[in-house]
Length: 288
Image (tube, rainbow, N blue to C red; front, side, top):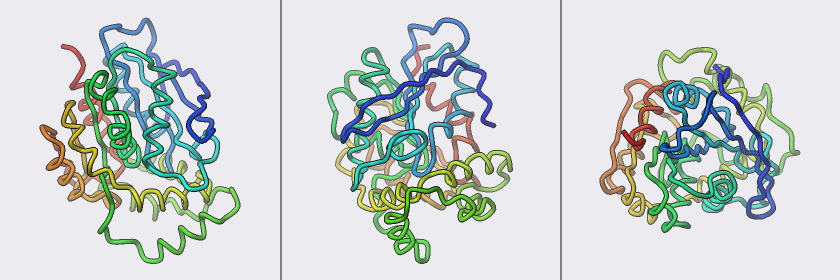
């Protein structure tokens, strides 16, 4: 599932608060089609840029399109997050990546989970750039706010401990079968589950805890109207346990002109479970 039949160039970008962001430029074999927008993809909490690999492979099998991914602060190969990170600051991290790797030309933005929240924050912080450059947005398994969600038992206490823990990965403390059931819906490919859970297992514990707090405080409801300025497609699995379907319905109601697709029996990890559907949504704004 992680195999990529494309060329990947790695970059290091200085983002706000001095965080060093590891970013990737994905090119299909042969020249890039200059009529196509650059696709910039933001991943979710405890994941890495690799969670977008299945979708990129489909996109680049169809189009000679340039894709950009990156590891959020503290995730993957990026340097640790600020002492008190916020989702709003992630909007500025996304802008820093765009400024370096896609400084001009049209864009299509895709965000999964916390990555979708990142795009909402980017819209709120940089509305003029959104209107002038972004041709389409795809929001996958995400929410403008998680206030009111039903918490997992003891999660707040566990996350507080993680925030103060040594900078080590939880590894086997995150068991694959349990985490897989939380992240995926029915009939998931076991290989996809293994690949996705491994990303969680390798995320450092303070990053897990601090960004849990950031997500709990995340509120971009005021930014949603701005996304009405660009075509926005919202995707959610009906068995998403982390950002339930009601939160995507709320996004749809608040983003003027948006499209909502609910995928029966699928879970939170649609970049694996519904990679073709996610790729289709990203392609909607490509010139015909």
